[in-house]
Amino acid sequence: MAQSPQIHSQTLEPSQGATPAEVTRMQTARALGPGLLIVAMVAMAAQFLSDHYGAPVMLMAILLGMPLQFLSEDPRAKAGIYFASRAILRIGVALLGVRVSAEMLVQIGAQNVGLVLVAVAATILMSVALAPLVGKNRLFGFLTGGAVAICGASAAMAISSLLPNRAESERDLSFTVISVTLMSTLAMIVYPVLTEQLGLGPKLAGVFLGGTIHDVAQVVGAGYSVSDEVGDISTLVKLFRVTLLAPVVFIGALMLRKSVPAGAKRPPLVPAFVLAFLALAAANSFHLIPQAVIGPIDTLSRAMLVAAVAAVGMKTSLKELKDVGGTAIVIIVAQTGFLAALVLAGVMLLR
Image 1 (cartoon, rainbow, N blue to C red):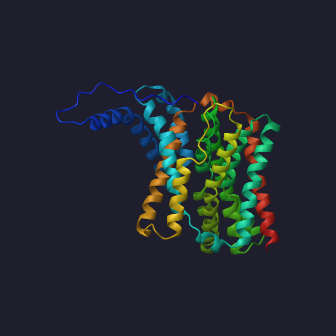
Image 2 (cartoon, rainbow, N blue to C red):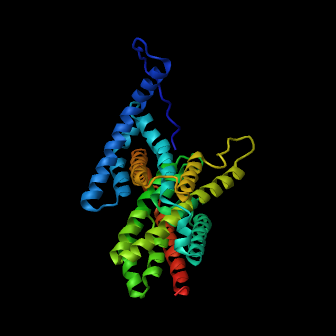
Image 3 (cartoon, rainbow, N blue to C red):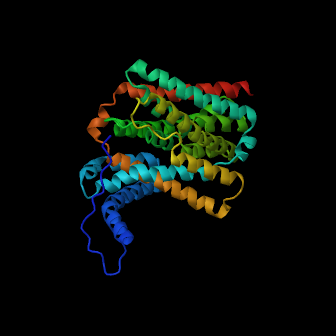
C-alpha cells in the first residue's frame, strides 16, 4: 500500500483579518478538494447506474474507479483520494451503528443468534486456516473471511483499515470487494429459489437469507422477493451480522498487536471508528437517536462507503489485480459455500 500522501500546503496569502486557523482550513481544502471532487463524481455515477439499472452500487463504484487509477498518482488529486479511502471510510463504518440495537437480539431469538454467531466465527476461522494451504497469507484469509461472514464490502473496508500496510493491500482489498459483491449478487438470485425448493417457512427462510448473503442490499432484495415477512426477518438477521463487525475488528486488532515485533508501532486496541460504531449502537438501543434522523444518517453512511470504495478503486492497478491469482477466487467460493452450508444445516435442525 502506498504511504499516506503528505498534504503540501500551497502558498496562500491570507486575506486581511484572516486567522491562522482559517488559512489552514483554506490550505487543507485546496489540498483535498480536487481528489474529493473526483471521488464524489465517481460515487454519484455508480449510484446512478445502481438506481437506474439495478447494478450493485459497490461493484459499480470500484469498477468505475479503477480506470482512473492514474489520478491517484497526480499530486493535485492524490491527497483527496487517499483521504476518501481511509478517513471517509472509517466515518461511514462508524455511522453504520445507527442501524443496530439490542432489541434485534430479542426479535431474532436466542437459537438464531447462536447460529449466526457460530457461522460467522467458523467462517472466519476456516478462512484463516485455508489461506496458507492455497498459497495466500493469513491476513488475506482474515480479510476475505470477514467480508463473507459479516457484511461484504463494508466489512472488507473496515478490516483492511487495521491490517498492516503491505504492497498488495489495495489490490487485495479491491479483489475482495469485487468478488464478494459478485458472489452476493449470485446468492441473491439463487438462495431464494433454494429456500422454496427446501420448503423452508418464512422465519427459517429469513434466517437463512440474512445469515448467508454478503451485502445488506442483496439481503433486502432476496428476502422481499420471497415475501414481506421473509424480507423483514432476513433484514433483521443481516443487521445482527453487521453488529458483529465491531467485535471482529476488536479481536483482529488484538491479535495483530500481539504479532507486532517489540518496539514497532502497534495498531490501536480498539480503533476509534469501532468505538463510535458501538456508541451509536448503544444510543440507538436506548432510543436516544430520534427516528427522524436515523434514515438520513444511514443514507450518509452508505454514501460515504460508496465514495470510499470508489477511492480504493482509483488506487488499484488493473495489472496488479490480475496478480491475485485463481486460488483467491477459490477461497471466496469456498468461504461462501461453507457459510451457506453451515447456516442451512443449522436452519434444518431448527425446523
